[in-house]
Structures are given as C-alpha cells and as structure tokens.
Length: 169
Ligand code: ADP
Image 1 (cartoon, rainbow, N blue to C red):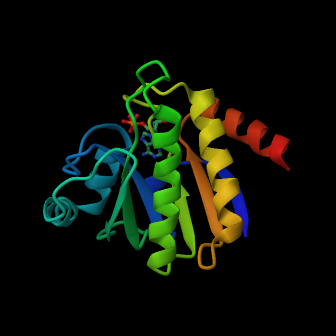
Image 2: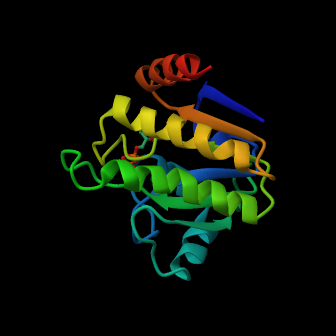
C-alpha cells in the first residue's frame, strides 16, 4: 500500500484508473477534463453520454479507450463558494467515492488530479489537506486498491502535497 506524489500529465499514466475532475454533465470541459477526453478519443464522450450526468461529490466509471490507463473514474468536485457550502465534505466524497468504485471494479492503482483546484477555484492548500486526509483515512480499509498517486500538474501543488504527506508520515 502506498501513496505517491508525482508531477506529471495524468493522461500519460499507465495505471488501473485515472480520475477525471469532470463537470456534472460528464460531457467534457476544460482543464484536466479536456486533456483526458482529447487523449482518450471520441469514444469516451460517447460512453459518458449514456450515463446521464453525475451529481457533485459522486463518481462514475468508464473505459479508458486510447489512454494508457485502463479505466477513467469521473468525479464532480465542488465549486468553491467561500467554504461554507459543504465544499470540504463534497470534495472528501469525491475521493471516497472514487476509491469505492476502484475497489468494486478490481482496480489496484489509481491516480488523482488536484480536484476542484483549477476553474472551480478551491484553495490549493485546503484542497490538498482534504485530498491527503481522506485518502490516508480510507486506503487502509481498501482490499483491492494498493497504490494511489496524487498527480500534480503545477509546481505549487507538488510542493504542497509533498509537505503535507511528509507531515502525515
Ligand atoms: P476543476 O474544474 O475541478 O477545478 P480543472 O481541470 O480546472 O478542474 O483543474 C483541476 C486540476 O487539474 C488543476 O490543479 C490543474 O492544474 C490540473 N490539471 C490540468 N490539466 C492536467 C493534466 N493534463 N494532468 C494533471 N492535472 C491537470
């Protein structure tokens, strides 16, 4: 069982599943969502269209198509509205529900982006605490998932995650 922090483009990773920070339509968007759809090819949006959307805090699973990752777990992070609109609970649910789906689908390795910290405006330090706190809490009870990667796109998140994880260990 391990938690690793890497600085990378999530679409390049050969893991059991990469997590997409999707919007509730699941029909694609900007940021990491756009990058995942571009790399997976048009079959991904076709499958997503059959799902019928996803509420904030929940997660849905699809194939990975042309990605090196076998599956994509789409989760919808909260839009930051100042912190008093259940944002921490909803963000924690994204990580918890993604891990649950991975468990149910026999996925041993999973890579998370920094959900909600782009266009959705969640403060990076606060989001990192929720992400690491929730995964560190849930992972010991996972029977299938062994390896979790936090994939930081920017140097600021990479430094933040490394510091927070060190503090936990
Ligand atoms: P949200 O709408 O949940 O805020 P964004 O895609 O705007 O989603 O941003 C979420 C995080 O994903 C940001 O930290 C952003 O830097 C990062 N990101 C963007 N593109 C990629 C990528 N190709 N791989 C990994 N992370 C990415």
